[in-house]
Length: 476
Image 1 (cartoon, rainbow, N blue to C red):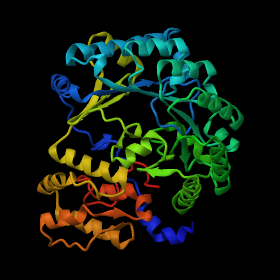
Image 2 (cartoon, rainbow, N blue to C red):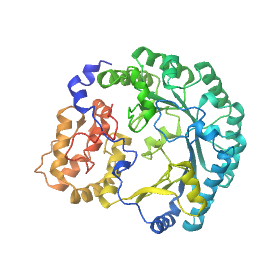
Image 3 (tube, helix red, strand yellow):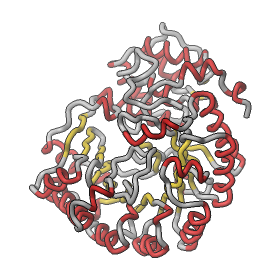
Image 4 (cartoon, rainbow, N blue to C red):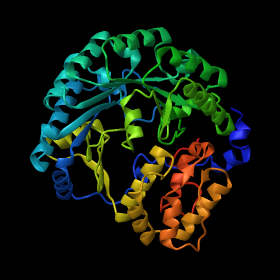
């Protein structure tokens, strides 16, 4: 693909700005007042009929990768504290679940799925993993998924996952180029990764995903080609190609990466176009912001049925009404609220041991928050509002609280810059006429590249601005 035919350097410079990823709305830095604990439990109890999806955070890593911004535990800290830290932590997750069972009435039969993230969940032994999941009843009927470091995943661990009924596994590969893996501190090579993925294939998991990162220090068109050649040979069911966010004020280890060339702007965009060209030629479908799937994968089928959502774990198709996070730093979300647990491992464990939830912050969604969330979610997942007539009421509520004139002005600017297709609309249109035209909005190829910028037009906190605070990463 010709870069300049897709988007001009001027457009790249204009829109490659700080903007939220919108894994939640409002974004975490904009959260205000958390719900009171009693209100939170009442809300959970009222939503049990819609099901609950658990997120279990396993923060332990055998080594720390320089690029990563996730909450994880320095192995040096762990080895100098308690030899039983992992066991104690797993017991604490069980205790936290018991607190929720006692105060919210949640039972194992309400669970629709469980996702284990980190950190590195496969720092657990097969016995520790089995112990952790034993608390949640029969797992064979639930949607189970887990994140894995392929370098430290053993055949026995994969066999344990299969016996426990895990359906989706996700290998955090990030890049196959040995030089780049060395820069970011990622161990392992293609041969060992290929071997463990072949073992996973033999166990018939429903879906095998690989995570890759775009824009890592040292990446070039030739290194991307190197990685994509190996992706093609492995042919995973899904690929999450996350954009590297250089935020050293949040992830201090990233500071050390600045000695290497970090692709940004048009250079990074050329890498994105190359990876999409290759993936599309291999029959992968682009889903949402940064996911790609073969047509046979469950998420591709959910995408066709308009059942894909976006949350803190990326794009998924779970339809549970509540995401309940257990473990240090875990985030919970529901129709009306967000909560995040204490990040400090020992503070988290101590608070739970005292029979209290370890919440450190949260947010109660306003009516406007809920409207913005549904609108932005739909755009991020489907690149259009067409076929989503249910948003008509959300837009009606939105315009009672937000400015129609300001939104239309932003949308017209995007259209002028070639980022979206939309019928003629003016700031003098009445509300209902404007809504009907906005419901027909569709992003162009260039618009999908800058989809977070377009989503920000529906963010009431950014309606008067073209970019967000430096708290957020850049759009490319």
